[in-house]
Length: 147
Image (cartoon, rainbow, N blue to C red; front, side, top):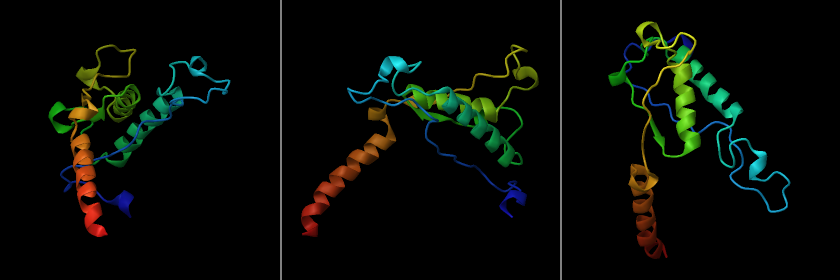
C-alpha cells in the first residue's frame, strides 16, 4: 500500500543513515591483518560500502520519484555529514545514485556523476555534541535525585 501512495502532499523527507561497509577501525596486536592489509587503511569506506551507498541512493530515487525532482536543484536538498572520511564518502556515493547528472548537469560525458555539496562541521561544533553534552549533564544532575 505504501509503495502505491504518492508523495505530492509531502513537504520533506529526512533519510538518516550510517556509512557503508568499512574496514576495521583497529586490529588486535596478534591479528595478521594489520592496517597495511586494507587498501585505504583502518576505518575507511570499502568498495562494498561505496556500492551499498550508491545503491541506496538509487533506491531512494525510485522510492521517492514522485517527490524528488529528476535532477539536482541546490535549494531543494541539504546533505549533512560528520567530518569523517567514510561518512563524507558515503554521502557522496549516495548522492551519485540519487542524482545522476542529466542535461546541463553533464560536464563530462563519460562521467556519470556530478558534484553535489556535502556540508559538515566538526563533531565538537555539531548540534549532536551539544545534545550529548547537555544530556550527560542532565543525567549527572538527576542521578542523585533518583536515590
